Length: 121
Image 1 (spheres, rainbow, N blue to C red):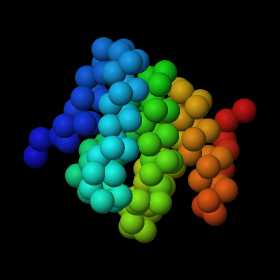
Image 2: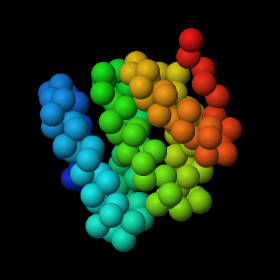
Image 3: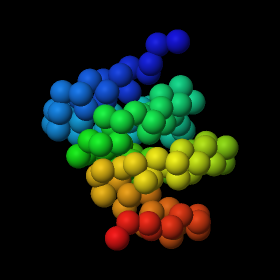
């Protein structure tokens, strides 16, 4: 199965180090969620979460742009999708180089009633 078009484009932008394209493609994630009736398509979410096991993404300066999309579109995730996202984020957390990514999924998720600890100093 080919990778979701948006995520494939994000991968290309990360490899190229193209910050402007990263911003644009990250924004397109929200537009896709809206276009799908304010719900996360499973194929998009699955492909996006696969990035969290990719060293290039985890070491990228602006990986937080993608994590931010999960935060701002949290309410559009189903309960099952939220559980999956939290599990993936917890596993990826110690490997993120971009501390803004850590902020986006600790502070916001913590005040949303989830048990996520801030682990960086």
